[in-house]
Length: 564
Image 1 (cartoon, rainbow, N blue to C red):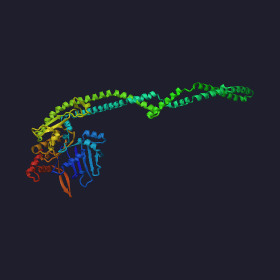
Image 2 (cartoon, rainbow, N blue to C red; image 1 turned 180 degrees about the horizontal axis):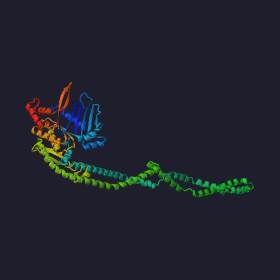
Image 3 (cartoon, helix red, strand yellow; image 1 turned 180 degrees about the vertical axis):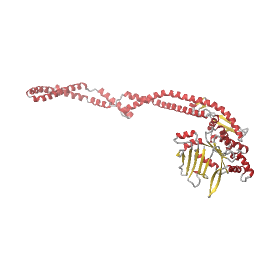
Image 4 (spheres, helix red, strand yellow; image 1 turned 45 degrees about the vertical axis):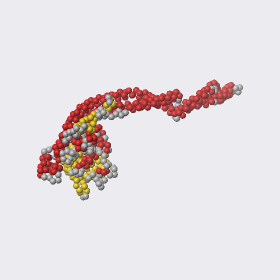
């Protein structure tokens, strides 16, 4: 509930402070005094956008501050999720600056406009002649029907199921898109993997091939060199092994004479053994090495193939092998995606069937509620001075586009509100066919229709504070009294702030405020005063009799006020 409202430097308001109470709060005053300005200021608290034009002349800033008590649980939950600590009370303040540095404070902390716009309609809702947003937007009519029929909870469940369905559809769509993309790439991936695998590359292979190529290219020279070594060491007449063998025998004899030569004998024998081993290895090498033009050609072809792959992939052998591993992994993922699609299709179908079944069940209830809503609203409208009102709820055919088929069954489009796009139709005149409400209702008719709908559809405490701007437009007499009683009825479960010109409504107020315009030091400003019991009688008398008040008018006013 709105407990306090402070407005400073807003339009013609210098500074105003209102302490509001529960029930029906009424604002009265002469035309142009600034009553609607107060409601416009409250619109800022509800999240409306604003420009610097609202700032009072010769001032740098305008501010609106509101204190709310007993915040609804959904609002506290929303603020908690956004990181704001909120007790039972909440202070919201908006500052509008000519410099463009506008600020919003929520509980003393800075707050973004989008958050205020989210919570605003849940704490303050404004219904004015030119601000009947709910009735002027057909897409909101279904919520009013649900509220009347007590189906809001079921409608919320439909919304959750629809979001789950949309999420399942999105997962399936992404998986299919990924699968299609991968299928298009499959041939390329397969070709890459097969080409690289067929090449049987090894990281060190190129260096090994170069070494083998070098040997084959010089095979004749290597062979001749080995033969020359065998000739020198073993085969020739003056072969070193034979000569050293003969000298070794002589040296061993000398060592028998002088043992000091024994070490030299051992060195010579060791050298002789190594020369014999070298001769064996030269022979073996010569037997292996030989010039083979075919083998050399094969090596050159293999090196050329490696070079071709390196040029094609612009990568080293190690990087090409990594490309092969990645291609094989993607091919495996493609196989996995193909296996995943049926599971996602089953999940989507299960979500669609659940949402569809719930939507069909809710649709049946809506059809029944619509018949009762029509009868009761026409009755309320007659009581509010529109005796010839015809009110209808049309269940419309859904608009469809190419993106709809997954959510269309039997020609019905499933949305987060169910399968029932509805629109209110209205005719205020006997003999005239009903037409879309948003297109033909006048401001006064909209005000009274909104009041009638709210009296039927509002859930107690759902939106604690309702603001009605001149709901009495175009009515008077007995109808005005009926409208006042209807406001009083709604005020039993909501705080109402109402701007009115009718004494029949003002007399029923739980709290009465008068808005006056006056000139102070050459500046026009608006003042708001809360009236006591006697002052309230005087104000109602003024509304009844104009400038010149008679004792009879005062007695009439007192009867109206005391008899409420």
